[in-house]
Image 1 (cartoon, rainbow, N blue to C red):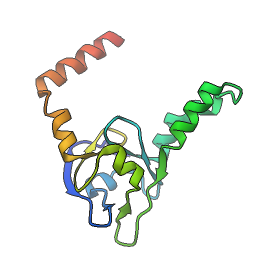
Image 2 (spheres, helix red, strand yellow; image 1 turned 60 degrees about the vertical axis):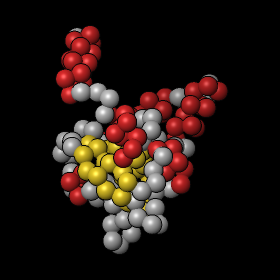
Image 3 (cartoon, rainbow, N blue to C red; image 1 turned 30 degrees about the vertical axis):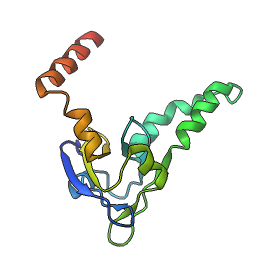
Image 4 (cartoon, rainbow, N blue to C red; image 1 turned 30 degrees about the horizontal axis):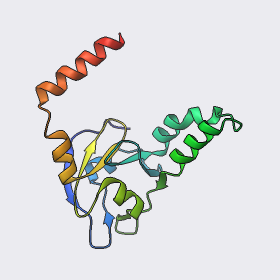
Length: 148
């Protein structure tokens, strides 16, 4: 899989369908199932099955006798849905996901390395617009130094 980066502004159509921009779609592994995931606040994440499986691997170890972990597993697993495209490459975006991310019409899709995020344009600008690239680099490098 290619590294996913950059952003593309586009729109939901009148029937709440979306096209995953070609620059991202073509970078995902060919013929691998994609999933919508409520992964990060205020946006919808789209992950290929291989990435999602890796992130969920720890759930194989969850003890069914632990009610808190089972509740967490249920919440997370119920926030995942397969991306199903029609013959024209459009995918219906389920209402629960649109509501979670506040998606109405104008959206921004952002590459995040091994997955993409779909944001309402307004939320994206409000969220990211408050941080300069200099601030982002400073924060990222200071966090990386802490983990070494």
